Image 1 (cartoon, rainbow, N blue to C red):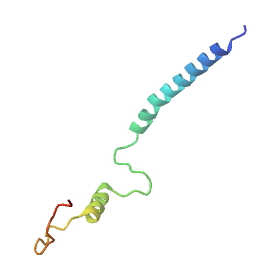
Image 2 (cartoon, rainbow, N blue to C red; image 1 turned 30 degrees about the horizontal axis):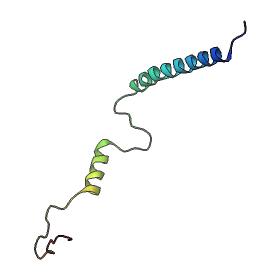
Image 3 (cartoon, rainbow, N blue to C red; image 1 turned 180 degrees about the vertical axis):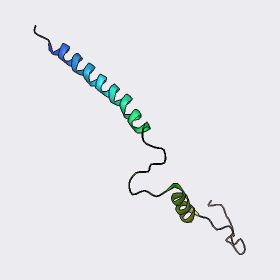
Image 4 (cartoon, rainbow, N blue to C red; image 1 turned 180 degrees about the horizontal axis):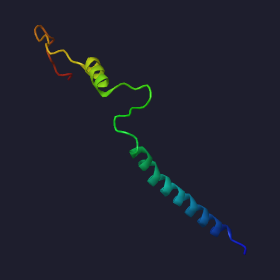
Length: 75
């Protein structure tokens, strides 16, 4: 049985899409088996990350509003 180039292409595309669908279904199941509190290697706990974010993005609550520059239009 001789297959044409079109038939081989269609079969190859079908196999590739079936493999992609299988991977798409299997990978989330593998990740779901991992415990929720398990963090990747080298990462810090959520509390540490939140504390570091507050320190980095923290804002000062008191702003000096006296003697500022007058706001003028640019035109």
